[in-house]
Amino acid sequence: MQWIELIVFGALFLLVTVLGFVASRWRRAATLDHLDEWGLGGRKFGSWITWFLIGGDLYTAYTFVAVPALLFGAGAMGFFAMPYTVIAYPLVFLPLLRLWSVSRARGYVTPADFVRGRYGSTVLATLVAITGIVATMPYIALQLVGLEAVLRTMGFNGAGFLGHLPLLIAFVILALYTYQSGLRAPALIAFVKDVLIYVVILVAVIYLPIRLGGWSEIFGAARAKFEATPSPADGVLLGPNNQLQYATLALGSALALFLYPHAATGVLASRGRDVLKRNMSALPAYSVLLGLLALLGFAAIAAGTQAITNNATGRPDGNTIVPKLFSDMFPSWFAGLAYAAIGIGALVPAAIMSIAAANLWTRNVYKEFIRRDATPRDEAKQAKLASLVVKFGAVAFIVFIDPQYAIDLQLIGGVIILQTLPAVAIALYTRWLHRWGLIAGWTVGMAWGLYLLYTIPNPVAGKEHFGGSALALEKLSILGWEPFAGSQVQIYVGIVALVANLLVAVAVTLVARRFKAFNGVDDTNGPDYHVDEHDKSLRPIGAH
Image (cartoon, rainbow, N blue to C red; front, side):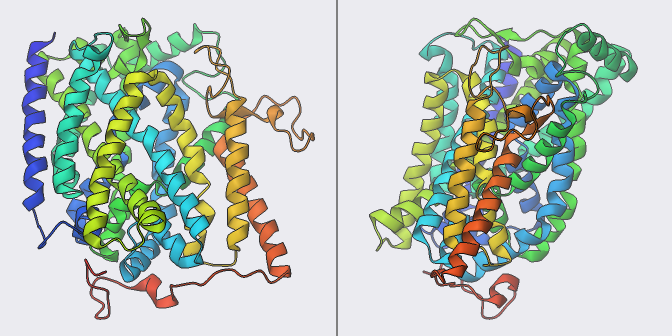
């Protein structure tokens, strides 16, 4: 047991726990018994709070643990996280402004609410809601993977239930203050998380090169490692067969980023369009931090860092590379600071994700099918209970299923959430696509995407199915036609499934329009997509 690290980690964890409970009184309205207040923080977060909230939401513990671990194991492919975050913000700048405006004008709490209002289709809205919940669940579980990596490095590496007990205690505390404070809790804690992360990473990228002989030595060690391995999939540079995968993975991840319910929740909680404009133009600064963070994977190679063996499975846990690097190279007190940064970096997004999933369940399943006459107070109560179920469902996922499987599911999550792009993002601009076309496109894209993922093996991990998200073009078969037979070039499955989704949506739309099929009633109107916080006719926050 690493006692000094544990004491520093425990003290900072206690600090954020206190902040989590205090948050219920921070900028509080008359009551939290409304989703506008509990689930969206009163829709009044300004530029600084929104910056920390969205940043804390998108740059998670898994990012801090897995991106360097991917560079440690595979090299250049791990840098896909850089271009995707760089292109994501300009890509979603205008659609997010429209989503905020129409949601503020109409009182929408979730993207599925918008789809329901835009197309008057319960089926389509339910598909979007369920897709969001399913894609979010493994993402929450992945935060636990990052937190467990830190706990394992500090000495909590037992097998069975006792090995997971510290994780369970941490999430009980998280569940309690999220239940009480709603979105205000992660918004307040995000300040502490971001300050810790910036301090830890900046110190690390200055100190480690000095200790290891400079960046030339670090890159040289990485090159030597990859040249000594026979795999064509790794290296300091991309190979000819994975360049397309790199580009499509970056593009697909960028398109998916703000389709995730937790990202939309952070956006809808902001005060106005100007707040979002400032944030979308400034948030790429996080990408600089991400690039520096990724390089810790190469630093770990130069330092000779070895992953800690998971006593529950008997296999090395690759996610412990970064925590172990800090343990090996820094004083105990600073390593404890780094562990706290990663641990708190798990709590903030886990809280936002559970709130986003709870909002989807409450507004688009519970109120739609179970209790149509639910009052705002009933909705808030149901969302609080649902957030508890989601959190402990994620904990059960980690306790009873191999965490490595949860990591694989994150790849599936990106493919899944991309299938909502036509119904959510495109619908912000036009209703040309027919609702039956959107439903058909979602069905085909989802089915084909999951099938292609099922066919991908991973011999290294001993998996025959769901072994990754990179598909060789020779495996693409369209009704028996193989347009790229013999090609070993790889592509991201999410893009392939999205293209199929769009083609089917367009084809069915043309047929539906030919036969004049009813396309639902649009509850929104043109001005709704441009309202801002100071408009006099704006719906009051907390109204029915």
